[in-house]
Amino acid sequence: MVFARLRHGLGRTRNRIAHALRRLGGDQSTEETLETLEEILYTADVGPLSERLLEEAEAELKSGALAHPRELPAWLEQRLAAAVRGPEDGRPLPPAEHRPTVTLVVGVNGSGKTTSVAKLVHWLQGQGRSVLVAAGDTFRAAAVEQLGVWCERAGVPMVRGAEGADPAAVAHDAAQAAKARGVDDLVVDTAGRLHTQKNLMAELEKVSRILGRQVEGAPHHVLLVLDATTGQNALQQARRFLESVPVTGAFLTKLDGTAKGGATLAVGEELGIPVLFVGVGEGLEDLEVFDPAEFAAALLAPRNEPAET
Ligand SMILES: Nc1nc2c(ncn2[C@@H]2O[C@H](COP(=O)(O)OP(=O)(O)OP(=O)(O)O)[C@@H](O)[C@H]2O)c(=O)[nH]1
Ligand SMILES: [Mg+2]
Image (cartoon, rainbow, N blue to C red):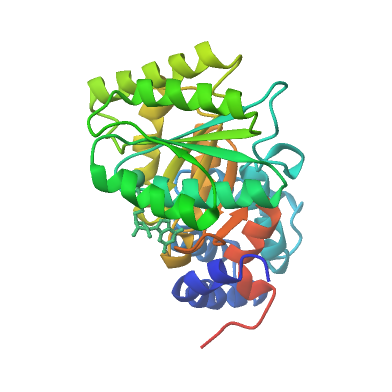
């Protein structure tokens, strides 16, 4: 089942939400209903979006647009789904006009970039696309090794530089190799960096610029990898990345192990970027293309299936 691991990960949250949702079906006053709704939104860590939804719910209950609190769970599911964009036409990373399609993967330390690059490679192969990987994290030799292991497992070639090499030089070499080999996709891993490290953010701009010189319009996709377990903090980090590189979408990782699934919605709503993928485990296959409707349903899973006890 799609999002089964997410449902599982959200287990504890789900039980609390399940209780609250059941109360919505009962005979509560408008005030009690809104309190219950607030609890649900808070539990799911939906963030600033909560306030807007609460105001809307209040207005609609008072105007009669929402006739009974019983209708709130369905209303909520629909609103949550509408708050965040998924990939256009359900197709993330569409091919660029000319080969290779270049995808740059960025984010803070430990957010899950390298693992996500591996998953992306695997997913792209599943779409029938040939891939080359650039080991743009030249900071640590171990980083290149880690990516190398994944690439070997997935059976894709990897271009690497010497330890401490300029990541832009690696990106340059990889782009040339990708063109020479005629592969469909080039995926570029980068070192983790804090949004506050100005020089490292400038380095990212340089990598992006160099890629653009090699391949028209590159990078065509810039994926910002965000650790969902950091909840609303992920937003803070994300804003600064958006200033340095043209981020085209988010890859939300570690949704299998978080009670903060709502952060996903906050990302979409607050940053205005689509969520393209979610990571739901540490393996190559543990990636889902993001679907807002399915996600909202999973978040409010108890509405659609009996709650676990
Ligand atoms: N449970 C779970 N773990 C994940 C997921 N994605 C990544 N991880 C784990 O998160 C940890 C960090 O992942 P990396 O891919 O090395 O993160 P990174 O952003 O490349 O890290 P740096 O290169 O050091 O900045 C590893 O233990 C991964 O297995 C996910 O979707 N679910
Ligand atoms: Mg890494």
